[in-house]
Length: 353
Image 1 (cartoon, rainbow, N blue to C red):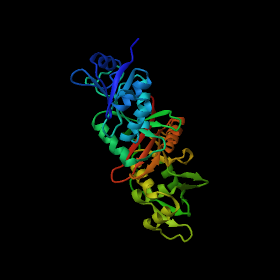
Image 2 (image 1 turned 90 degrees about the vertical axis):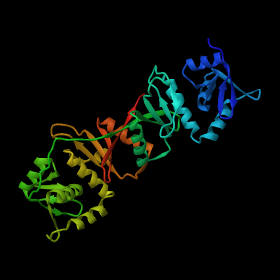
Image 3 (image 1 turned 60 degrees about the vertical axis):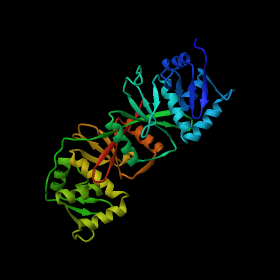
Image 4 (image 1 turned 135 degrees about the vertical axis):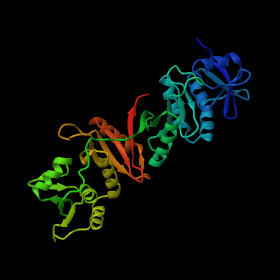
C-alpha cells in the first residue's frame, strides 16, 4: 500500500520535494511535471484531485492545507476552476491522463496507456457548464484550431447535478445523388401562406423529378422556401392568386420574410443542400428546419436533420442537447447549417470517451 506523500504549497503550485515521493506520484498516473533535481510540481487542479484521493497531504508554513484552501486559490486564478475540476476528475476516473492545455482547450487527454512527452494526445477537451451560452463562430474557430492540430475535440458539459455529458463536433459535407433539373416552364399561384401549381403535368414534373411539394387534390402545393428556390434557379413564374398578376421575386421574398422567421438563412442553406444533390423537405415534425435525403425518399429515410442558422448564432447547451437527443432517437444526424459566404455544416454527437 502506498504511503501518503508530503507536498508543499508554494504560491499557486504544489511541490513534492523528495525525489522518491515525486517518482511515486508521477509514475502512478503521470500527475504533475518533474523538475530539475527530482522534485515534482503539481497544478492546483492535480493537487486537489490527489488530496481528495488521499494520496498526498499538503502543508504551508508548517500547517496543513485543507481542500477549501486549494479551491479558494483555484477560483482566484481561474473563475471556471469548479467546472474544470469536475471534468478533470471525470476524465481521470475513466483511466485517462489529462493535462491542462492552453486555449482553445481546457485539457489535453492522452489515450489509455499513453505517456506524456511520448504519446500524442487523443482528445482536446473543453470544459463548460450547462448554463453557459455558446457562440457558434467561437466553436467553429476552436474546431479549426483543433483540426489543424489533428486532434478530436470534445465538449465536456457539466449539468446542475454535476453529471458529465460529452459531445464531439465535426464539420460535415452532406451529399446526395440528384442532379438539378435546369430551366423549366413553371407557373405557380401565391395563396398567402404557400403557393400552388395548378397544372397537373407541371406538378407531376416537379414532384416526380425532385419530390417538390405535396399533392392536395389535383394541385401541387409548394412551401415558401421551395417557391423562392424555384424562382431563382428554375425560372418559376409566380402569380398572385387574388389578381392573377405576375409577382416579382423581390415582392415575394418580402412577403415570405414577413411570414417566416430567418427566411434568408433557411433559403441559403436550402439552396446549398439542393446544390449538393440532396432532396430537402420540411423538418417541422422533428423540431428543425429541414430533413435531407441522400436518395429517393420513397426508398430511404432522411439521413440528416438540418437547422439553418447564421454564423453569429448564440445558443445554450440544453437546446443543443435536445436537438441531439431527438436526432439520435429517430436515427438521424443533426447538422447545423451555417449560412454566409461559405456554407458549413456542423455536426454534434453525444460521445462516450
